[in-house]
Image (cartoon, rainbow, N blue to C red):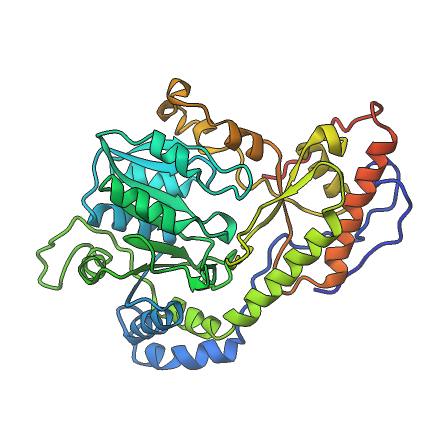
Amino acid sequence: MKDTIASRSDAPALHGGTPQFAQRFRFIQPTLPPMSEVVQRYETAYTRALITNGDLVAQFESAAAAWLGVPHCVAVSSCTSGLMLVLRALGLSGEIIIPSFTFFATAHAARWNGLQPVFADCDPDNWNVDLADVERRITPRTSAILAVHLYGNPCDVTALEALAARHHLKLIFDAAHAFGSQYRGIRIGGFGDAEVFSLSPTKLLVAGEGGLVATRDAKLAETLRIMRNYGDRGNYDPDWQGLNARMPEFNAALALAGLEMMEEKLRARNRVAERYTERLRSLPGTKFQQVHPEDGHTYKDYSVHISPEQFGIDRDELAGALLAENIETKKYFWPPLHKQKLYRAYYDPALGTLTNTEYVTNNILSLPIYESLTAATVDGVAKAIERIASHYSRSAGGERIHQHANIG
């Protein structure tokens, strides 16, 4: 992307200043391998007309398993279908505990399997699920815990594994954001009963669309391979009520080529995140996701928490002011699941409120982050936020923004 940073005054664009950027740039832009490499991998499959159920998916599964350091990987059509199949294959019933602070596909997979989601609170610092709250919500009807490595920040998997074992529960990780994350120096992928990755264009490893289930359980992996093909072993007499959740050969070719870029993409994302944090950490009312010093974060998303009392304006007002500067933002993930119309009925505050989740999600704002984002663009975004914060700190109690941007 070629940066076009406009000339500017001290005033934010929403209050008469020149926008920080002369043109709006993309919120997310996947870094893809050269097309020639993808075509070269795909050409044989295409020439032989083996565009599904061919060799490339198997090659990708093997390469991904080696990269992650796990014995089994099963490629599927999406992270959501992977979660759906894993929950079905494990034979779960009754209740499943999941964080309310997550993308709604996490809960969709549970409901597709007839499971009752029980929403747990998040930790106020690392924003992953709060272990103490998970344990408080376990009942005789609980069959599993479905935790999320939020934004790619690893959960405390050791503690979660111990908790699940103590209560004889299955443990699954929605690792949609976490291909490339590390827990205490070990790559995410081999924890719990299964970890399920997303390979969609917002992630570091991109297959166009696709997902990947990683597990140490050979029987589960075998079952998932059958289930992704309608539950049919090939004898036209299904063993499982499965899905068409196969990954096409082209998607596997794209993912295989992208796998070779992962190390550099991880370094680039972390450089962007570190630069944002360095620029913004001194602003009053800003808070960032805390990462354990021994862990590795993918920064699928980079989000800042805004405390309006200290910052001067709230999250939505900041989003509107940034849009005027030609900077798009997102509210990942707001509203939380227990506030969404599909899932409100599953939330009973009498069983425990989700105070931390509401506090974090009501004030979270995600900034643009991707590998090709230049230092100049990151500095421009930070400068715009600094300028907005300075304006409202000088005019505290004065004019506030009344037109909130639709940032989705």
